[in-house]
Amino acid sequence: MKADFAWAIVGPGAIAHRFAEAVHHLPHTRLHTVVGRNAARAQEFTAAWTHDGAPPPLATDDLTATLRNPAIDAIYIATPHAQHGEFIRQCLLAGKPVLCEKPLVPTAYQAQALICLAREQGVFLMEALWSRFLPVVDLVGGWLQSGAIGEVRAVQSSFCFSTEYDPRSRLFDPALAGGSLLDIGIYNLALSRWALQHCPGAKGRECPEPLHIQADAVLAPTGVDQRVIGTLIFPHGVSAQFVCGFDTTADNSLRILGAHGAIVLEHDFWQATSATLHTKDQPAQTQQAPYQINGFEGEIEEVMRCVRAGLAESPRMPHTETLALVRWMDAIRAQVGVRYPFD
Image (tube, rainbow, N blue to C red; front, side):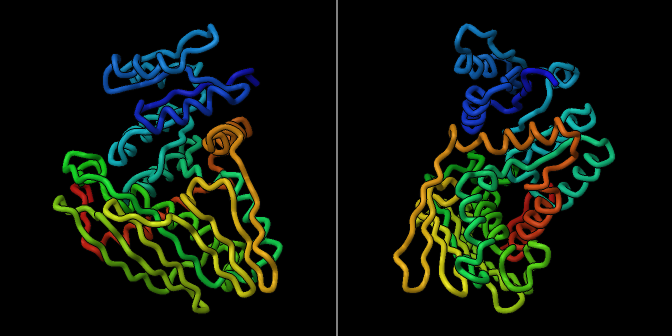
Protein backbone atom coordinates (compact mmCIF):
# COMPACT_ATOMS: atom_id res chain seq x y z
CA MET A 1 0.00 0.00 0.00
CA LYS A 2 1.33 3.44 -0.88
CA ALA A 3 1.97 5.77 2.06
CA ASP A 4 -0.14 8.54 0.52
CA PHE A 5 -3.39 8.31 -1.43
CA ALA A 6 -3.09 10.82 -4.27
CA TRP A 7 -6.15 12.79 -5.40
CA ALA A 8 -6.83 14.87 -8.48
CA ILE A 9 -9.58 17.50 -8.52
CA VAL A 10 -11.55 18.32 -11.67
CA GLY A 11 -13.29 21.67 -11.27
CA PRO A 12 -11.43 24.00 -8.89
CA GLY A 13 -14.43 25.93 -7.58
CA ALA A 14 -15.64 26.86 -4.11
CA ILE A 15 -16.76 23.39 -3.02
CA ALA A 16 -13.43 21.91 -4.15
CA HIS A 17 -11.64 24.11 -1.60
CA ARG A 18 -13.53 22.37 1.18
CA PHE A 19 -12.56 19.00 -0.27
CA ALA A 20 -8.91 20.10 -0.54
CA GLU A 21 -8.93 21.29 3.07
CA ALA A 22 -10.06 17.86 4.28
CA VAL A 23 -7.48 16.09 2.13
CA HIS A 24 -4.77 18.41 3.44
CA HIS A 25 -5.49 17.57 7.08
CA LEU A 26 -6.15 13.84 6.72
CA PRO A 27 -3.19 11.51 7.22
CA HIS A 28 -1.80 9.41 4.37
CA THR A 29 -3.46 11.36 1.58
CA ARG A 30 -2.58 14.39 -0.53
CA LEU A 31 -3.76 16.60 -3.35
CA HIS A 32 -1.66 15.66 -6.40
CA THR A 33 -3.25 17.53 -9.35
CA VAL A 34 -5.88 20.17 -10.02
CA VAL A 35 -7.55 20.25 -13.44
CA GLY A 36 -9.27 23.50 -14.44
CA ARG A 37 -10.80 24.97 -17.57
CA ASN A 38 -7.53 26.81 -17.94
CA ALA A 39 -4.16 26.28 -16.30
CA ALA A 40 -4.14 29.74 -14.72
CA ARG A 41 -7.32 29.03 -12.76
CA ALA A 42 -5.96 25.68 -11.65
CA GLN A 43 -2.70 27.36 -10.61
CA GLU A 44 -4.58 29.89 -8.51
CA PHE A 45 -6.35 27.04 -6.72
CA THR A 46 -3.15 25.08 -6.00
CA ALA A 47 -1.50 28.17 -4.52
CA ALA A 48 -4.02 28.02 -1.67
CA TRP A 49 -3.01 24.44 -0.87
CA THR A 50 0.76 24.62 -0.95
CA HIS A 51 1.89 24.24 2.66
CA ASP A 52 4.64 23.13 4.99
CA GLY A 53 7.35 23.13 2.36
CA ALA A 54 5.72 20.22 0.52
CA PRO A 55 5.75 20.15 -3.30
CA PRO A 56 2.77 22.11 -4.65
CA PRO A 57 -0.01 20.21 -6.41
CA LEU A 58 0.23 20.18 -10.18
CA ALA A 59 -2.02 22.64 -12.03
CA THR A 60 -3.21 21.79 -15.53
CA ASP A 61 -5.98 22.06 -18.08
CA ASP A 62 -5.10 18.64 -19.55
CA LEU A 63 -7.48 16.01 -18.20
CA THR A 64 -6.22 13.34 -20.60
CA ALA A 65 -2.67 13.57 -19.29
CA THR A 66 -3.95 13.57 -15.71
CA LEU A 67 -5.90 10.36 -16.30
CA ARG A 68 -2.80 8.70 -17.73
CA ASN A 69 -0.74 9.49 -14.63
CA PRO A 70 -0.26 6.27 -12.63
CA ALA A 71 0.54 8.25 -9.48
CA ILE A 72 -3.08 9.44 -9.15
CA ASP A 73 -5.30 7.10 -7.13
CA ALA A 74 -8.72 8.76 -7.54
CA ILE A 75 -10.50 11.73 -9.09
CA TYR A 76 -12.87 14.15 -7.34
CA ILE A 77 -15.24 15.90 -9.77
CA ALA A 78 -16.69 19.25 -8.66
CA THR A 79 -17.87 20.86 -11.90
CA PRO A 80 -21.46 22.07 -12.55
CA HIS A 81 -23.99 19.21 -12.63
CA ALA A 82 -24.44 19.06 -16.39
CA GLN A 83 -20.72 18.44 -16.92
CA HIS A 84 -20.43 15.52 -14.50
CA GLY A 85 -21.38 12.78 -16.91
CA GLU A 86 -18.66 13.29 -19.52
CA PHE A 87 -15.94 13.69 -16.92
CA ILE A 88 -17.08 10.56 -15.09
CA ARG A 89 -17.11 8.60 -18.34
CA GLN A 90 -13.55 9.64 -19.21
CA CYS A 91 -12.30 8.75 -15.74
CA LEU A 92 -13.94 5.32 -15.73
CA LEU A 93 -12.59 4.47 -19.19
CA ALA A 94 -9.13 5.44 -17.94
CA GLY A 95 -9.53 3.14 -14.94
CA LYS A 96 -9.54 5.96 -12.37
CA PRO A 97 -11.83 5.67 -9.32
CA VAL A 98 -14.31 8.54 -9.09
CA LEU A 99 -15.93 10.53 -6.32
CA CYS A 100 -18.34 12.95 -8.02
CA GLU A 101 -20.26 15.77 -6.39
CA LYS A 102 -24.00 15.39 -6.02
CA PRO A 103 -26.08 14.93 -8.04
CA LEU A 104 -23.97 12.33 -9.78
CA VAL A 105 -25.76 13.31 -13.01
CA PRO A 106 -29.05 15.12 -13.64
CA THR A 107 -31.08 12.17 -14.99
CA ALA A 108 -31.65 8.51 -14.19
CA TYR A 109 -30.86 7.56 -17.78
CA GLN A 110 -27.38 9.05 -17.48
CA ALA A 111 -26.85 7.56 -14.03
CA GLN A 112 -27.78 4.05 -15.14
CA ALA A 113 -25.42 4.22 -18.11
CA LEU A 114 -22.48 5.38 -15.99
CA ILE A 115 -23.10 2.84 -13.25
CA CYS A 116 -23.20 0.09 -15.87
CA LEU A 117 -19.92 1.40 -17.28
CA ALA A 118 -18.31 1.46 -13.82
CA ARG A 119 -19.34 -2.14 -13.23
CA GLU A 120 -18.16 -3.24 -16.68
CA GLN A 121 -14.79 -1.55 -16.14
CA GLY A 122 -14.54 -2.72 -12.54
CA VAL A 123 -13.80 0.87 -11.44
CA PHE A 124 -15.03 2.49 -8.22
CA LEU A 125 -17.72 5.17 -8.54
CA MET A 126 -19.50 7.05 -5.74
CA GLU A 127 -21.78 10.07 -5.52
CA ALA A 128 -20.36 12.63 -3.07
CA LEU A 129 -23.29 12.99 -0.70
CA TRP A 130 -21.07 13.99 2.19
CA SER A 131 -23.99 14.29 4.63
CA ARG A 132 -24.38 10.51 4.65
CA PHE A 133 -20.92 10.24 6.27
CA LEU A 134 -21.24 12.81 9.05
CA PRO A 135 -20.79 11.86 12.73
CA VAL A 136 -24.34 13.07 13.43
CA VAL A 137 -25.68 10.44 11.02
CA ASP A 138 -24.01 7.72 13.05
CA LEU A 139 -25.43 9.25 16.24
CA VAL A 140 -28.99 9.44 14.92
CA GLY A 141 -28.65 6.04 13.28
CA GLY A 142 -27.87 4.57 16.68
CA TRP A 143 -31.01 6.12 18.15
CA LEU A 144 -33.15 4.81 15.30
CA GLN A 145 -31.69 1.30 15.46
CA SER A 146 -32.20 1.16 19.24
CA GLY A 147 -35.88 1.96 18.79
CA ALA A 148 -35.59 5.20 20.77
CA ILE A 149 -38.51 6.75 18.84
CA GLY A 150 -40.13 3.55 17.59
CA GLU A 151 -40.96 3.06 13.94
CA VAL A 152 -40.55 6.14 11.79
CA ARG A 153 -43.90 7.61 10.70
CA ALA A 154 -42.89 10.83 8.93
CA VAL A 155 -39.95 13.02 7.95
CA GLN A 156 -40.17 16.79 7.48
CA SER A 157 -37.37 19.01 6.19
CA SER A 158 -36.55 22.39 4.71
CA PHE A 159 -33.51 23.70 2.84
CA CYS A 160 -34.01 27.23 1.58
CA PHE A 161 -31.98 30.38 1.11
CA SER A 162 -32.65 33.61 -0.76
CA THR A 163 -30.32 34.53 -3.58
CA GLU A 164 -30.45 37.06 -6.39
CA TYR A 165 -31.76 35.74 -9.67
CA ASP A 166 -29.08 35.48 -12.35
CA PRO A 167 -29.98 33.58 -15.53
CA ARG A 168 -26.28 32.86 -16.18
CA SER A 169 -25.71 31.35 -12.73
CA ARG A 170 -25.36 27.58 -12.39
CA LEU A 171 -28.34 27.81 -10.00
CA PHE A 172 -30.69 29.11 -12.71
CA ASP A 173 -29.21 28.03 -16.05
CA PRO A 174 -31.02 24.96 -17.49
CA ALA A 175 -27.99 24.14 -19.65
CA LEU A 176 -26.05 23.66 -16.40
CA ALA A 177 -28.87 21.58 -14.83
CA GLY A 178 -29.84 24.43 -12.53
CA GLY A 179 -32.73 24.44 -10.09
CA SER A 180 -33.20 24.05 -6.36
CA LEU A 181 -34.15 20.37 -6.45
CA LEU A 182 -30.89 19.05 -7.87
CA ASP A 183 -28.72 21.58 -6.08
CA ILE A 184 -30.11 21.45 -2.54
CA GLY A 185 -33.34 19.41 -2.53
CA ILE A 186 -31.25 16.30 -3.04
CA TYR A 187 -30.18 16.66 0.60
CA ASN A 188 -33.81 16.65 1.75
CA LEU A 189 -34.49 13.51 -0.25
CA ALA A 190 -31.24 11.72 0.59
CA LEU A 191 -31.56 12.10 4.37
CA SER A 192 -35.30 11.40 4.26
CA ARG A 193 -34.54 8.14 2.43
CA TRP A 194 -31.95 7.29 5.05
CA ALA A 195 -34.38 7.94 7.93
CA LEU A 196 -37.16 5.96 6.22
CA GLN A 197 -35.05 2.83 6.36
CA HIS A 198 -36.58 2.56 9.83
CA CYS A 199 -40.24 2.95 8.87
CA PRO A 200 -42.91 0.22 8.66
CA GLY A 201 -42.53 -1.60 5.37
CA ALA A 202 -38.78 -1.07 5.11
CA LYS A 203 -37.24 -4.42 4.24
CA GLY A 204 -33.64 -5.15 5.07
CA ARG A 205 -33.30 -1.55 6.22
CA GLU A 206 -33.98 -0.22 2.72
CA CYS A 207 -36.24 2.74 2.08
CA PRO A 208 -39.50 1.59 0.45
CA GLU A 209 -40.59 3.16 -2.81
CA PRO A 210 -43.31 5.82 -2.57
CA LEU A 211 -46.86 4.99 -3.53
CA HIS A 212 -47.44 8.57 -4.58
CA ILE A 213 -45.43 11.75 -5.14
CA GLN A 214 -47.11 15.14 -5.11
CA ALA A 215 -44.94 18.15 -5.98
CA ASP A 216 -45.48 21.79 -6.82
CA ALA A 217 -42.92 24.36 -7.87
CA VAL A 218 -42.34 28.03 -8.51
CA LEU A 219 -40.32 28.27 -11.72
CA ALA A 220 -37.67 30.87 -12.47
CA PRO A 221 -37.86 32.78 -15.78
CA THR A 222 -35.32 30.33 -17.20
CA GLY A 223 -37.74 27.45 -16.55
CA VAL A 224 -35.82 25.75 -13.74
CA ASP A 225 -37.34 25.23 -10.30
CA GLN A 226 -36.82 28.21 -8.03
CA ARG A 227 -38.71 26.50 -5.21
CA VAL A 228 -40.14 22.99 -4.81
CA ILE A 229 -42.61 21.71 -2.24
CA GLY A 230 -43.12 17.96 -2.18
CA THR A 231 -44.88 15.18 -0.32
CA LEU A 232 -44.05 11.50 -0.79
CA ILE A 233 -46.48 8.91 0.56
CA PHE A 234 -45.25 5.41 1.43
CA PRO A 235 -46.94 2.20 2.57
CA HIS A 236 -48.59 2.20 6.01
CA GLY A 237 -49.29 5.95 5.79
CA VAL A 238 -45.66 7.00 6.18
CA SER A 239 -44.80 10.35 4.59
CA ALA A 240 -41.87 12.59 3.74
CA GLN A 241 -42.50 16.30 3.25
CA PHE A 242 -39.92 18.84 2.11
CA VAL A 243 -39.40 22.32 0.75
CA CYS A 244 -36.29 23.60 -1.01
CA GLY A 245 -35.78 26.93 -2.69
CA PHE A 246 -33.61 29.84 -3.72
CA ASP A 247 -36.25 32.50 -2.90
CA THR A 248 -37.20 31.64 0.67
CA THR A 249 -35.81 31.66 4.20
CA ALA A 250 -36.42 28.63 6.43
CA ASP A 251 -35.13 27.06 9.63
CA ASN A 252 -33.44 24.38 7.45
CA SER A 253 -34.14 21.60 9.91
CA LEU A 254 -34.97 17.92 9.53
CA ARG A 255 -37.43 16.19 11.85
CA ILE A 256 -37.86 12.44 12.10
CA LEU A 257 -41.21 11.62 13.72
CA GLY A 258 -41.63 8.20 15.26
CA ALA A 259 -44.28 6.19 17.07
CA HIS A 260 -42.78 7.06 20.48
CA GLY A 261 -40.73 10.20 19.93
CA ALA A 262 -38.90 12.47 17.50
CA ILE A 263 -35.37 13.33 16.44
CA VAL A 264 -34.52 16.84 15.27
CA LEU A 265 -31.53 18.11 13.33
CA GLU A 266 -31.81 21.88 13.69
CA HIS A 267 -30.15 24.59 11.63
CA ASP A 268 -28.66 23.31 8.39
CA PHE A 269 -29.48 19.64 8.80
CA TRP A 270 -27.25 18.58 5.88
CA GLN A 271 -24.19 19.71 7.84
CA ALA A 272 -25.45 19.28 11.39
CA THR A 273 -23.08 18.73 14.30
CA SER A 274 -25.73 17.93 16.91
CA ALA A 275 -29.10 16.22 17.22
CA THR A 276 -31.92 16.31 19.76
CA LEU A 277 -33.92 13.29 20.91
CA HIS A 278 -37.48 13.90 22.14
CA THR A 279 -39.30 11.07 23.90
CA LYS A 280 -42.51 10.95 25.90
CA ASP A 281 -42.23 12.06 29.53
CA GLN A 282 -38.47 12.63 29.23
CA PRO A 283 -36.47 15.84 28.91
CA ALA A 284 -35.12 16.58 25.46
CA GLN A 285 -31.63 15.13 25.02
CA THR A 286 -29.18 17.01 22.78
CA GLN A 287 -25.88 15.41 21.83
CA GLN A 288 -22.96 16.93 19.98
CA ALA A 289 -21.34 15.18 17.01
CA PRO A 290 -18.56 17.49 15.78
CA TYR A 291 -16.53 17.11 12.61
CA GLN A 292 -12.98 15.83 12.72
CA ILE A 293 -11.99 18.46 10.11
CA ASN A 294 -14.76 20.10 8.06
CA GLY A 295 -17.23 17.30 7.38
CA PHE A 296 -15.81 16.14 4.05
CA GLU A 297 -13.37 13.75 5.69
CA GLY A 298 -15.98 10.98 6.05
CA GLU A 299 -16.65 10.54 2.35
CA ILE A 300 -12.94 10.87 1.52
CA GLU A 301 -11.99 8.17 4.00
CA GLU A 302 -14.76 5.95 2.65
CA VAL A 303 -13.48 6.23 -0.93
CA MET A 304 -9.91 5.47 0.12
CA ARG A 305 -11.06 2.46 2.14
CA CYS A 306 -13.16 1.09 -0.72
CA VAL A 307 -10.52 1.66 -3.41
CA ARG A 308 -7.81 0.02 -1.33
CA ALA A 309 -10.16 -2.92 -0.72
CA GLY A 310 -10.82 -3.28 -4.45
CA LEU A 311 -14.53 -2.45 -4.19
CA ALA A 312 -16.52 -1.05 -7.13
CA GLU A 313 -18.98 0.82 -4.92
CA SER A 314 -19.46 1.95 -1.34
CA PRO A 315 -21.76 -0.10 0.90
CA ARG A 316 -22.66 3.17 2.68
CA MET A 317 -23.53 5.05 -0.53
CA PRO A 318 -24.20 2.30 -3.07
CA HIS A 319 -25.18 2.70 -6.70
CA THR A 320 -28.75 1.66 -5.90
CA GLU A 321 -29.08 4.67 -3.61
CA THR A 322 -27.87 7.06 -6.29
CA LEU A 323 -30.32 5.57 -8.80
CA ALA A 324 -33.24 5.76 -6.39
CA LEU A 325 -32.54 9.42 -5.62
CA VAL A 326 -32.23 10.52 -9.22
CA ARG A 327 -35.40 8.60 -10.17
CA TRP A 328 -37.31 10.48 -7.47
CA MET A 329 -35.93 13.76 -8.79
CA ASP A 330 -36.80 12.82 -12.37
CA ALA A 331 -40.38 12.13 -11.26
CA ILE A 332 -40.61 15.44 -9.38
CA ARG A 333 -39.15 17.43 -12.29
CA ALA A 334 -41.58 15.82 -14.71
CA GLN A 335 -44.50 16.66 -12.42
CA VAL A 336 -43.58 20.33 -12.04
CA GLY A 337 -42.61 20.78 -15.71
CA VAL A 338 -38.85 21.32 -15.49
CA ARG A 339 -36.93 20.05 -18.50
CA TYR A 340 -33.28 20.33 -19.41
CA PRO A 341 -31.87 20.60 -22.96
CA PHE A 342 -30.31 17.16 -22.57
CA ASP A 343 -33.44 15.36 -21.24
